[in-house]
Image (cartoon, rainbow, N blue to C red):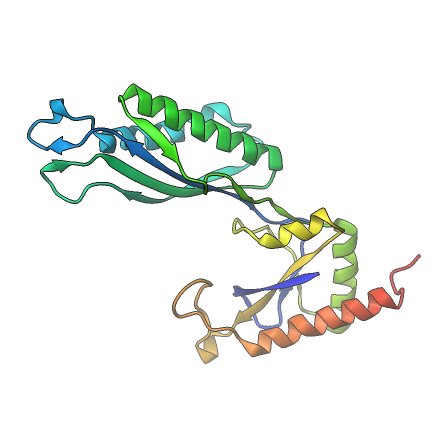
Amino acid sequence: YGNHQSPFLEVGQIKVLKGPSHAGCAGVEFDVIGKGGHGSRPDKCINPLTATANIVTALTTAWVNQLDVSKTVTFGLGSINGGSASNVIPDRCNVKGTLRFFDDKAGEDALEVLKEVVNTTARAHKCYVEFSDYTRIVAYPTINDPDLAEKVITSLNDIYPTSFLDGNPTYGSESFFGYSKLCPSVYTKFGVRDEKNGISAGSHTPEFDINPEGIKYAVGLQVKFALDFLKGAFDD
């Protein structure tokens, strides 16, 4: 059982989903390598920047044509770095991003499609690619056990009758997924948003500030659920 704060939920709100809670994540990082030189003679160079531009465009097309449309996979391009001067063609260009998915196989397949598209497009521009160790599945989807989630909801409604929220899973990823490989698990989100007191910033931002009032609800539910579970309150 785990709790995660959410600045998008008001204090007192707790979101419990039956099934997918957080997306899986595949890391993406690679260098497109060409041959640098002076910008006045592009014919003497192999430009990794133009190759990279075509790679990004090709990935968009590949997503439409090669992945199962019924299984959501997203590609978030986070960084392109190559070159530092207007008149110099660099040797390499670095690309970083992530894939997000809710189906294990869909995520694994998407990562293989990405590698193939990157490699073949680079070769078409006479470049080659080096993938970093980050290009792998770094987190599988966090999936709440439906029966356990129902028990948590029962405890929640007992202690905080107006707090329960349903909804959609988040595309953010969580290392908590590993617990579901060991036993049934459930991961909740509790609200910390309180605009009246200036607490509204998103997670992973410099302005973020945890709200102790929200934690009270999260811990209260966690204790209530643990007591109910241990006392056999959910036994048939």
